[in-house]
Length: 445
Image (cartoon, rainbow, N blue to C red; front, side):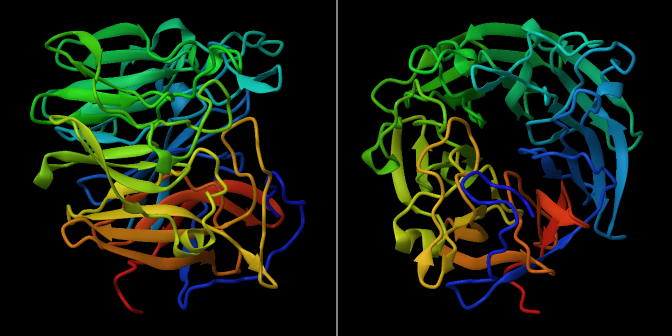
């Protein structure tokens, strides 16, 4: 069984649901037994296929990229991240992750890499400063492109100061890539037209390399582009929102608006274990020329109007059992499985829901020192139709054997309305992270 903080290993919780319906997810075996928890690195492309990266937390194994073809119902290995970055024989800590979605422009997918192997320093996972014997320090993440037709990769840039890319977005129309590095939180801007990478410095004290209670700050995991003027926005854990326009070349704080809302909860931005007042995930919604985001810990959906500017709460879009219980979800950072669907109007959200045994809610740890699950919970699929304001909890998701998808922080919606994610899968007493497919929630089978 999977081990979660606050839950004893080996305990099998019963198959339970407060709702009348459940969804059954199909699991896939990509052939990567060492695959570890993966964040964001999953997207549907214009060719109808699903591209994803499976992460590694090992010093001797790098992350790997795959593709799933719905027409054949088969997965296929594409490449090892360390190899496509040209570092196979360098003896360095490998490219263990991609922490970003894929962005498509002119037949190419753009994404970036991140470190997956950490050093435990003062009880926290840190960027290694003392590599294991025989290894060199992590050389820094890369910005890459992948040609959908030729299958060729291009290594576009290496991030400064040996850091990985923890969050990234792309202005597809203008050809600009923006990201935040880990652990210190440097804001970077890469222009694919000129090949120039700019480092605009640290955005939030000392980021996740800081000392708890002092200069530690959780870093924003999602950035959003205003396509009307090309400005990119990100949040910081204190709740302020910052914008950067490449024409101006400077980062500016938005005045008279922030995310320090009572409904989101109360946070000490200097302490690890939550995202603070950061938004968890955000995207642009063209029909309203505004952005829709979710605050992770509270699960509140909100509109961000950058031109006004202001934050407008819509409603809490956690699962129905979570709303009835009034509790935060168990994953302390909130969930990254939040995306606008292919119809351009429906939000798809993979979030948590409490488990009840003999009428009592299964509780987790009250506090943890990093972004992780405080306890075991169900995974629910939520949809929200923006024009109609229609929320729907489609119920908890289980595998065919009754087990639960765990540590889900990714989402992609296929052309047929099926929902994909990367989750922990246990088979033959071994747990790996792999691709799962959830049937179209709007089709009755």
